[in-house]
Length: 203
Image (cartoon, rainbow, N blue to C red; front, side, top):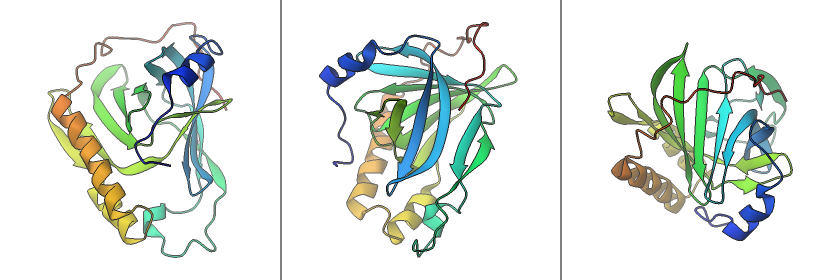
């Protein structure tokens, strides 16, 4: 699949009516045909153009048991099993369909702590929610708008081990550069708060 390809709006319209605000949906991060992380979210908004998801601190997750793939040379005996995990902060995830990134807003103890650009495959719809693949490189943005690259060494190591090609790595970085140039923050969601009736999403 093309690294930056996405689903058509026609497909998105077809699935739009299947969920409603407040439903639990599952976001899975895949790699090499395996689930690397599974995180339940609460659906906040679903339109033809984007999906907005909420995941609070303490949400149970499943995460790969083995070390990060960019650290592994030989995957022949790699442990692909999943272990229990816990989401560590309050996060609102805004993703436009077809984009190769999500924009996250983070809070800690009710205090807004900044934005996070998670570079990833465009979302693919599943019966449970959406799938994507993480691209190793990310961008962190402080509340004052100061930004910095995160995990550049992770992407370089992933390329060295053949997890991404040089061409894919250039496309990943170019996507981050486009987001930085566009500066889609503040988003208008910084003062948003979840519905008091929502319970923590469960797997």
